[in-house]
Length: 218
Image (cartoon, rainbow, N blue to C red; front, top):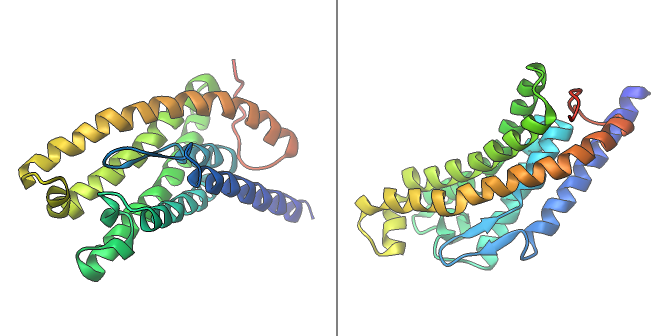
């Protein structure tokens, strides 16, 4: 009975976090339109969910984020939507599969990486004040690096054509996006994960839900 009750609470908690992801993904706060690509804050509840509920929950929330990204890039396409939506593919079925990997697969990795990193830091008895922003920063960078890295390795030619540059210039443009967008996103994630995570960890402990850290928040 206790296990069943715990599982039910876990499922409800995952569903609530997924609802937050969906709401963010469908408001200007979640998908911020930039000239070339959509910057995002949707990865933040994915990271927090992975911390509170474990890597499997993080993977589920990452998948929800990815599906929202796929839909957003299909319904409101941008210059690079071919890399995020299989329906905008310019290279047939292979391109569609690559787009699903970038939009969904890379986002699943956010939750998995954040969840296991949190577990590792907890086993090392790293204080929450250090662990929370570290997981937030690295989780966010996993999103940026895997997405932009996959675009470079899978869609370099199409990216160059979309930006009207030589293929040899793609690496510099990718690194520019990582620096200009990815690092600020990661810093924001570190701050928000620390602020929100400290509060929610205590709430989830009292509810006996998930796999939150036992380390004190000094």
